[in-house]
Image (tube, helix red, strand yellow):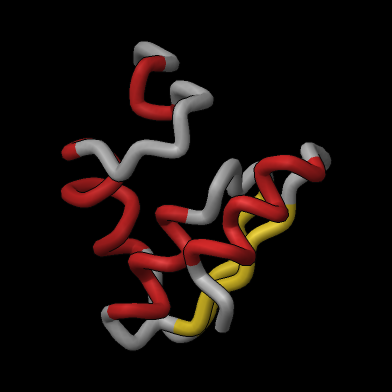
Length: 68
């Protein structure tokens, strides 16, 4: 399997939408959340999600985009 679906770009790509998201249930903790697109999307469709990342700039961006 290629590492392409997990490329460090924060994108919600077709792989994540079609393969990972259907596996998400009641709550999700995303390690390496980048700028929060996946966690923000999951919260938007009713799945509680939080993300963590070691990059402070990514976390600040995520908090700006997804304040909840």
